[in-house]
Image (cartoon, rainbow, N blue to C red; front, top):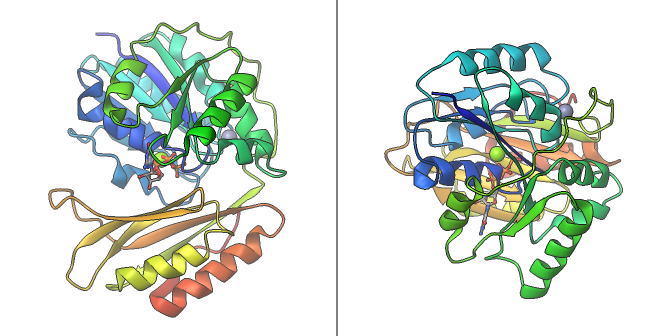
Length: 316
Ligand SMILES: Nc1nc2c(ncn2[C@@H]2O[C@H](COP(=O)(O)OP(=O)(O)OP(=O)(O)O)[C@@H](O)[C@H]2O)c(=O)[nH]1
Ligand SMILES: [Mg+2]
Ligand SMILES: [Zn+2]
């Protein structure tokens, strides 16, 4: 069997892991291995991706498109040599360019799948014009063969129309698909069956600033927390953080997934059958000129409601 290698990119919080989970839960037939690369130093996605058979491989401590070449080569070579896989999906970090990995699709042992870029219907117009992250976002769209406009269930009709227009303008080479707000699983199932035109491989990695305009820190949450207060405090930081995600535990011992993406906070209880995480922690990411101050402020605000222990000081 020759596994199809598909790449999923898109800005932080645009819905890449949500799409991966949909593909894993039936939208993509056969056995699938997933490679995930979080921007933060702790890989939260590996915990949030529900791979039935444990075929989730984490690559951390750097951006998969420009900083982890040896790890990528090792991982891809090993996956290409496997004979039990139908699909390999690689979720590129939210600041990375999936186009940089596209050439792996023609490596012996792989069959080419699509380069999909997720675009959040509630945020893509603003992000693509943003002074700090606009370059990164437009570059991602420029690498897409398929653009999936996500969160169409949250966006007003005119925002979806504007999102489609900006995606079509920034990704004229791509096929732009709007997620069915009532049946996103169906959209995911159709996505990998679409006949896309593979883009010509791009040249060598062009040094740019995508990993440098963002900063991240990880906080370990000491003990159970009051989820409502936590949600309130995190919401108050939404203007200054481009992304937060993690796993926390409430006083009754239940685990919750936490997301802040495009200014919206979502806290959902984890399925009881999901394996218990080894620690409660949260990754915070900020962008722009004030990014270090934003992280410090968010960390102090969170420390006031939960016992937050810093794990890593902003470095990147
Ligand atoms: N309502 C709604 N929420 C969505 C949709 N897609 C993603 N989300 C939410 O958006 C947040 C971020 O989703 P993820 O799938 O983790 O995004 P991501 O692109 O993998 O994020 P990073 O890996 O951190 O870059 C989560 O709270 C998701 O539940 C969607 O289509 N509709
Ligand atoms: Mg993700
Ligand atoms: Zn990169």
